[in-house]
Image (cartoon, rainbow, N blue to C red; front, side, top):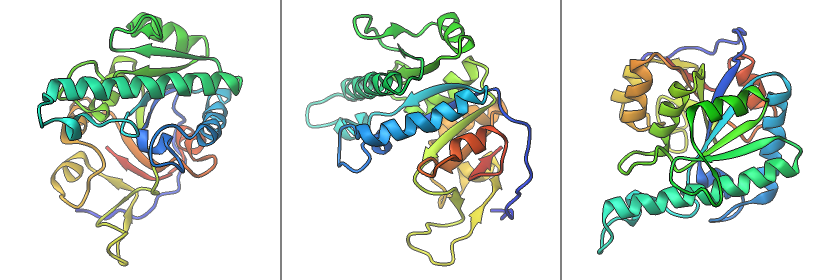
Length: 246
């Protein structure tokens, strides 16, 4: 893999981005469920981005409640397990929507699974209208079909809504040439190619389906630490934060 040195140059800011948040992140200090205090902090970070003029779509995972791939087996079919995972993302999206609204951020929860009693159905025009009115759009249900992760759903949704980048929020500050938890000499890279991200076994940032879809449509993915104050804003303003896959 080619190692690129950090590049601190500022690029053009993004006008519309998709922020991918995992269920693990939303659980914060807890082993499972929602950490409302952390989510409120995250809401304030997103508010900085919205106030700067960038439109934000959020795709949430559900791993803090259930992971479809892990549930499958012992009598539970994979399709059913993935449906359970989609419902887990719904719980996260509903909670996050309320927390964002309590922080005075206009937010709408849209769902890719049928759940009209608790959320609006995801419709392309409806999502676009919400975004143009300055609202944050939180999407539940992944892509609405089994065998596809929320990472793949995030890339698909970003393409559908004409996002300029996918921001993959993590608890580390980017991608390393090897596991920094195991190797003291691990080197962080500022940019890598989609090909390297897919073929290098030491890099596990997103599933190959998500990376392949982004590669096909030349949609950049930025891996960064979302738990550091102002990082989401800095990324959307074009600063060299984290690692850019392109």
